[in-house]
Image (tube, rainbow, N blue to C red; front, side, top):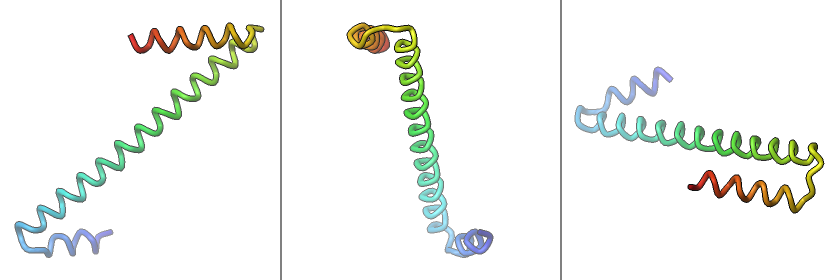
Length: 77
């Protein structure tokens, strides 16, 4: 890792800034994509737990579908 930093700092002045900007933007994009995927996973798990809770309450499939649909419509509004 230190050899990479040393080789980047050895590049002539205007070009090393371009390399740094590209590296920082790439790292930021990777971190952003990872957080988006983690959020999607958490929302999916929450929805599954909600549906399991409805099943445990003894609701029928039609009732569960109606509750889930109304819940998703209320989130959009």
